[in-house]
Length: 328
Image 1 (tube, helix red, strand yellow):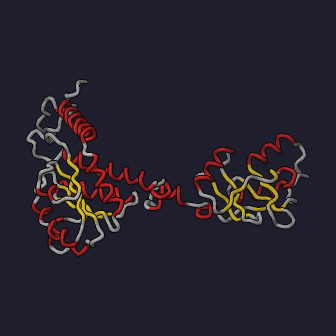
Image 2 (cartoon, one colour):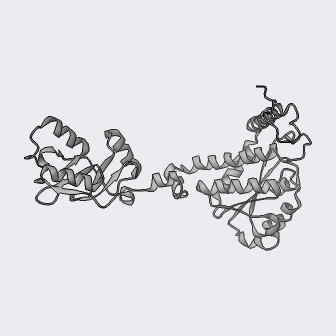
Image 3 (cartoon, one colour):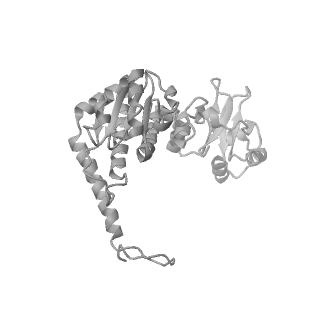
């Protein structure tokens, strides 16, 4: 099927020919713009911008109007999630009272492709009065915004992808990329690790995996029997426990072994006389266990390594405290 062929009809005007070519062209144009920026960026200005961000004792505050504002919110969110305190402030709202959110310790990143956005420029006198430092992201290094900035990160953009050169397209892509590049540079500077990332994402799957300990997910009700428990009672305990296993305690009520469904089947295959059998005859002695304070990621790795789906959790005295299944 050709790229421009349209399947089906909804009664609307048919797609113009060449739209898929337009998509490819836009992606290529923006990729070329990113490559141009990477090849020709002003390292002195970026060095100054990163120095300001590293030395900032307050928040890195993003501000921009329209599409630049949307991009600014995303950059701020990325910075905040990677260890740089940050928030977004709307320039118009700032000019009407929200300037009170800004302290002299904060650093401002002001976004304007033209460098002449009125709402952004109106903030500059107040910011200078407060003593704030300013990083400008703009496509015009000779603009009013750039002239009042402590560091200017130029987009190096030749034109927007929009055929009318009006809709913010390539400029927003470049701005977003600059924000990501700054955030990644700060990750390297601060040696920001996955565990640090997880602390800011405790609700996500990564946060859960990297912050959760065995004690947080273990099941406290562990089916337990004594070493003298008879064969039929062993079966009953495993069945009633619904865990596919049962812990075996010695006379001092400490863990002596474990009997799993597999242990039971293997014992039955090798022994014809079952009526006289008891738990100590079929249990696995000195079973692999977990401490309650182990990270759940380490527990999963251990269970996968030994190809087991459930492990007992013991305290320092080797008393059974709970159990963990691999899907917990």
